[in-house]
Figure 1 (tube, rainbow, N blue to C red):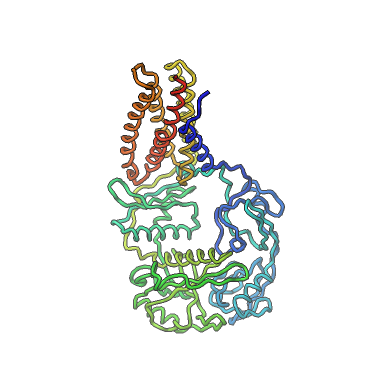
Figure 2 (spheres, one colour):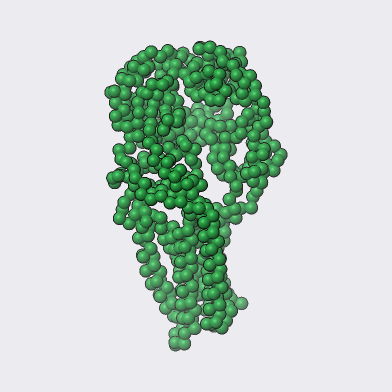
Length: 570
């Protein structure tokens, strides 16, 4: 019987850690991929990553099960909303308006069809007087028809009253923590180059603006990051799952136009001509002001300053001079809101303080809030909302043009076929190598041990990839195979050294074998470093997984293998 040494224990311990990192998941249900900020689900405390197991007593095994029970079965109800302009009546499942300081800032569906518009001051809802925003939310809770939903997740149970589907997106529960790249899931990839070298702040702005612009179009399954080639040229790499190259090109090539309007009149647009600066990362003109407790959760307010040109300030003064004022307990605001449009899509509406009516001012303070189930989540929500508005306002102000230099399409079928071919090829290679080793050494134990080491190196490498949340693409899989190939060579070197007939102790022979192995490891390690930048970083997966694989082999599996084989060959 082989005595278990420290090196073997380290090998077994690393296998255990890899299993924990990969964490096979056999839970049934659907995983929450995102939760809309300020929604009923968010206020109840539901969060991304939870697994929904049951809704109203119905077991949820997959997305199809969720879709069948996630929609409230309620009928339209009658609403009568009295404003300073008049009274508007309609039938719907929800009010269809959002207010701030009793002033309507967003209208949708039946409410818009009935004639309600942004900027109107709400006085009554179904004969209930509205004196402040709390009255509005009480009326909303009282009059909107709702259905009770009992939701059980892997963490806790929730009870919600809903009149529309949960504002969450769900997906199938991943079976492991291993993430796969676009090469396997399928989609499109674009390599975008700015016309000049960017500073780190400019590159960060480009990535933030691009992410938000694509989110405006409903694109969520997207990866945008900086990339560099071996010459140091800068690129933006955009990967979009499930899209065609034409769709991705259209999204990237869109103008990126920002406009701020009051009614139908444009006050200012994106670009240095109108917006000279947006305060960011400066506590003197941007930050979170205060947080307060609410009946259900908490709210935090933010503020930051936008610097306008003289011409934009004059346009703002001219347009606001003829607006009426809505007087509320929370403050006095103009009858129309400042609507922010990104690529002609309304993304936000801001109330305008009555103090700004008809005044020419080049410094405008933007205020807003974020809400959450507690102060910490409200603070994070306020920060995200502030960053979102700042990102919107700098859209169109980026002083450089972009060029799409490469556009690729990846079929999910080809990706799956590639993985299957790799698995088959690997299995065939393992069998062939084992057969050759058996013919060479005329023993079954050495080939079996080498095969066990190969498989363990693959498993530990996958564990490290899961731990660092690395997306495994085709290049990464090729890197794992390359690392395993070098591993077989090293183990044959160790095996031959233990069988040599020279008058050296076995310890000296193992030491000589490791001198050869470490020399080869160092050469391979250094030769792979340039690949981190080659091809604008597209070969980074190959370089990283190869380095991880050979490092695991040299420092974990080879020492354990040498201890085992030296005892077998005694």
